[in-house]
Length: 303
Image (cartoon, rainbow, N blue to C red; front, top):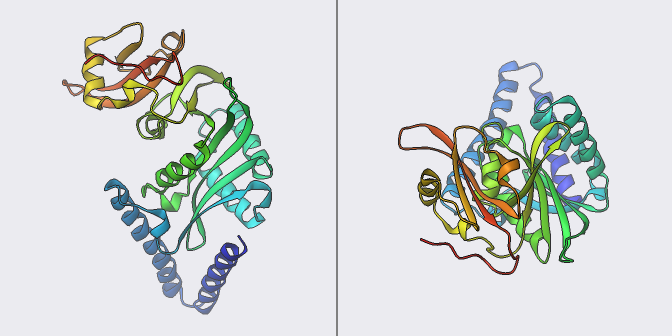
């Protein structure tokens, strides 16, 4: 940890020294700032291309480091940077009450010995992070961990770094545990919501109101528990267009956010959720629901 902070400080010192050298040369200062931005842009673009091709390995990225840090051991300089990222992502996004609650939860997590932060840095600069907190045990007596603050710095947007960090960190936290989280219900407002279901193997158990904001409660367990997770998007869309429904599964297509309070009942959980254009070119929400009959036995699904 000390070495990472020292590299961060050394980089900052060099930038400050260069900036001081060029203090009377505005053109050189602009060029210095642009060179830093160009470096990050090139790095971010390369990460995006590699991630799209499933060839992005965080361990092999030069000048990049992924670390897991107990929140109580975070340096104040890191807390400050993480607050800046939080502000950019959350300030003004929700109502005042929910924003206040989320801010309080984040501040509590920043100093909690029960919380681990997964932080990815590029040349010492925090690019993205998320937190995992031990919050008791599940109904089947497995350790339960709450995930939150999946955030990427504005400078590193579009590079899919956040996705890569999530995948690696979540897999690490998953071992022998049940993971829980919350998400927005609307893919339009928060596009990453779809990735929880389509890429990260979460499912939603119920919808609730969080300070007046509709929210989905998410879970993730080891193994592939749901047959609907194995279907292609085309299969989901075709079944939804037919209105396919049984005692075990239901497929929905809607031009508005699905009616989750009605659909999530009697141990039916949301397993797939994305947006796509139908044959007429209309953008729709597509969702698949499956009965959580047993966490040990995946369901069969008729062709």
